Amino acid sequence: MSSELRNFLSLSYDELEQLNLEAKEQRKNRVAAHKIQEERIKYLADEKRIKAVTVLFSDLEGRLHMLDYDKKFLIKSWDNLTFDGSSIRGFTAQRESDLRLSMDWSAFYWGPADVFGSGKVLVFGQVIDKDGSPYSADIRGALKGFAEKLYEKEKYTLNAANEIEGFLFKGADAERAYYETQKFEYVNTGGYYHSLPGDPLRTFIDTTAEVQRAMGFQNEKDHPEVAPSQFEINYGYGEVVAAADQIQLYKLICRQVATKMGFTASFLPKPVVGVNGNGMHTNVSISKGGKNLFWDAKGEEKLSKLGWAFLDRILTHGNDICLLLNPSVNAYRRLDPHFEAPNQLKASPVDRGSMIRIPIGNEKSMRVEVRSVAPDANPYMVMYSVFKTGLEGDTSKIKNLRQAQRYLPDNIYDALANFRKADWTTKLLGEDVKARYGDLKQASADRCSRLLGTFVKVPEVQYHHEVYNQFLWNLF
Image 1 (spheres, rainbow, N blue to C red):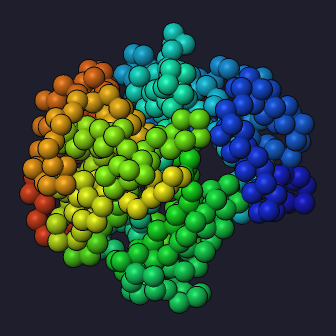
Image 2: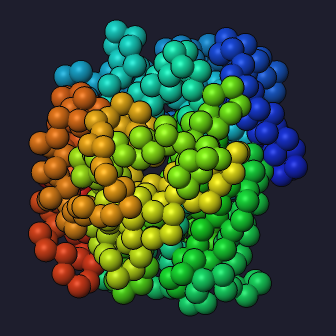
Image 3: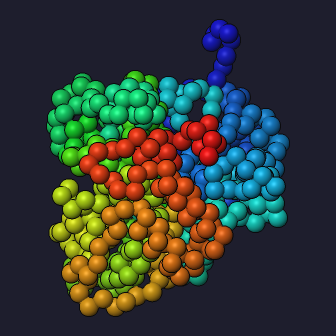
């Protein structure tokens, strides 16, 4: 069909940035949900150039799912959008397959037409059970409910910023073709901070950064990372649910841009043995009335008593929640002390082998950095487990938080055992969701070699939850 007959929404990057920043400000200022809902529905009705709305949600493992709804249908039926939950790993059994999606109208994004297609907008949804309550396996809903209750009760705002590393490999389908090639090919071997203007890695980083900027990410810096063909594109912090949403969008944007260039953006924690792996350092803080509660000018390392208690609880439960922060067989290759692995259950302002780092900060920026998080973790699960553990977990009142008393597991089987036997993970997720998550991770582990060995095995990639192959999984 001739494109001349179509009149679909296609905005300049400057226009997109303005719209996304306005929406971001509404979300930050906690504009009433019903007001944003009215505004968005009116916008969709008035903007004739929009043909469809892409609704995004995540499964229990953190894989992003997308459904396109015709705009006119969505305007009429936005409060009754049903889908088959039995087809989503970790969701319902076949006998209870009907679930609904509820629009989180504050999480509304305009995407560049040259990346996402013209005539579309994106909005995050929440999964709703038959009885109208939030669905227990939708961790985004659990995180949002937790954050909202804390704000209502304590006026706490939970803040997070993530540094997400990835690799750019040759070929548009490098991960799924790994069983044939058994190798990943670099597009650049320059290394840390080094990439010549116009080379493939620099072009990828520049293009991705432009898309992020247009979508209101408020970028900070971007650069090649330590390993060959590795990248990191940093952006500003946000309220915890918005921050987790941005992780999902960041990975989606990277993959989309890479595919259009004929490459693969990979967030496997350790796709290549012998070089640094991918991390997702998670910087967190808590504020109240605009004041950073982790800052204390007179505190040790300028961190407040609340901040020290927060990281004490995370270290206490570090082994319990390790599987939530490192959810794949491949993730345990990254927890290797030879490559600055954050596998020591301690806190330090300087030692990068510590699970938690205390970066230099000031009244605005003081935070704690959880370094042991892998980029293939469910971002909502990461935020939920870190904040809930840091605020409500047990504390062992560790005498010397700077000295490693214990280490994180070096394989998924030990992490699974810790996760299953811990009372805290039952309190965190509930028995049902905990069992579902454990079973999914067990299934992945059992399809891989128990011993990691010295090279990345085919099943380690082939059965990875982010290299999802529905046909393949359905054979088991």
